[in-house]
Length: 337
Image (cartoon, rainbow, N blue to C red):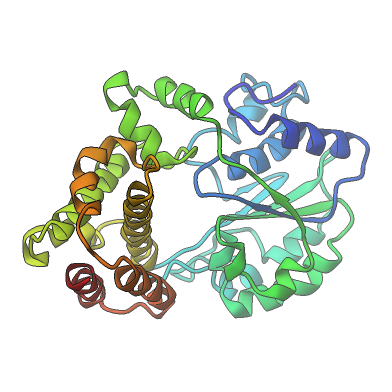
């Protein structure tokens, strides 16, 4: 009945399937919830089910294989994927209006609104999946408003985001919001084992992932580990020049600079929250780092200034500020507290 390679979210998937089969699924849906918990894959399951030769998202037929794997096409007979592009990591108006990529080359066979207005394949809907919808440029979002409010017959839009507050209110109001919860620890770890992870990394992988799958890639996990260690070193008195390199964006990363900076800042906020938990006798969420956190929690450090500095830095990320001075300022607030 469900895609065998997709973990969790059974109640939401069943509800969507029931509504799809009854012809009662809304024209524009907004999938929200923490990063890396499978929202995008649930959206793809809807399109995959209709293109599956067995109509079940079996994962075995040629139809399913077109909608599986990490390197998915941007356009299929019943699916259009809109994703952020370029150094700024935004969904530009040219992509929506004309189907062009960041190099002004054809990404789609036509513009998104025109594609959505075409008749769907027999027995299918036309699905338009907007990944990381919070990266919609304001002009792109405004261009989509009318179509989101009244999608063409047979066309369904799914916007996926872990930051719904960054979407225009006019976009949010035109979509039915479907909130996703994190995966359970066992569900997430089962997927991790299927991807080659072993018990030695389980405590740290589970703690960092928070019920998500964004650290299935080992390089991403090791980078997050290094960022936690860097903040702990700064809390312990080491200089930014010594340990700050792990916090800076990678120049060759496909992610925009602002998106890369978000992770270390959010990890710092998690560490500060754990210091507060330990002070009142609660267990830290980042339990594998308890031994390093406990002596830091015992210090008479005011946690509010570094917390405020990290939150302020997060607010400034859309402005694409120079990353090193931004992080140095947060580090200074951390060590001055």
